[in-house]
Image (cartoon, rainbow, N blue to C red; front, side, top):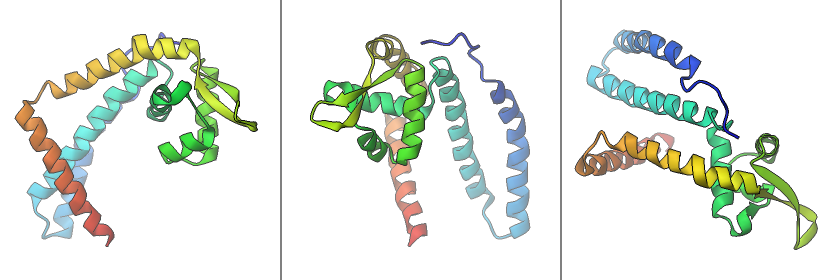
Amino acid sequence: MRSTKPKTNPAEKLKRESESEMEAAYRKLAADVGKIDREKIDFVLTCKKLKMEIDLKVESYYDQFQLSPGRFQILLLLRCAEGYALSPSDLAKKTGVSRASMTQFVDALEKAGYIVRKADPNDRRAMLIQISDGGLKTLNKEILPAYFKRAAHFADACTKTEMKRFAEMYERIRDHLASLEK
């Protein structure tokens, strides 16, 4: 199930090259609008850059397994479910996507050999999505160990105090962003 694609994402170079141009554009627009603290704009740009860097690294990780963040999330939910199976509607609710989108995710995971569709033993009209034996083996032996190693590597750049402070800042900013919706 592992792909032989190169480990570098071809879009990564292009995204990085355009990054400084986008930063310059944001700063120019903020200056044109006026009365906007440049430090605040730089802070927001730094947050956006961090998200982009993480996304690029995560995408290149998922690519080698023919996965996407959404497909990976489905595999995690199935891995934690009783009997490694859930209904498509339960998966859609838990991931916050439509049933139509879930069908596309399931089709792709089935084609890649990660999951199988099976009849629901409690309701003959219903179907369950279950991790295949090969999918479970790949998830447990390759995907999850490498994923958690990569996640730990992201955090290695910070001390425990810095990680705690970052989490506190995230919560404070998230709560403050909620005030925009009021």
